[in-house]
Length: 62
Image (cartoon, rainbow, N blue to C red; front, side):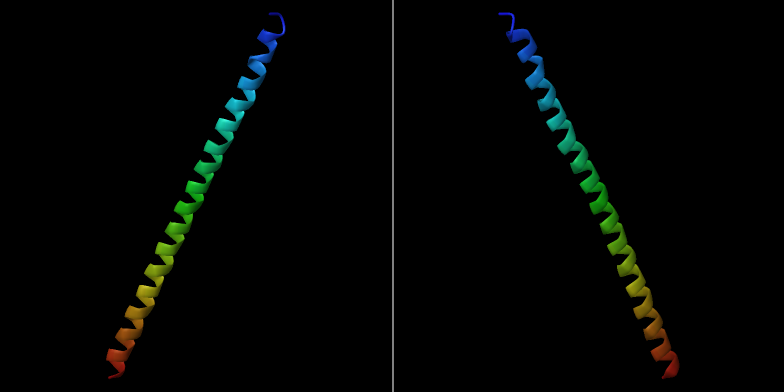
């Protein structure tokens, strides 16, 4: 019965670390995805502005 108490906390500690590490990685991945989505939205807005400017120039030239 003496070796059992030290063995039980040892496997529990690595399980806790394994659970914490993927959650942190997932949070970082979600943050990166959010940044990517924000960057894509900014690019789309810029493209829309460029298209509007081109259309305005075309109308002015006509």
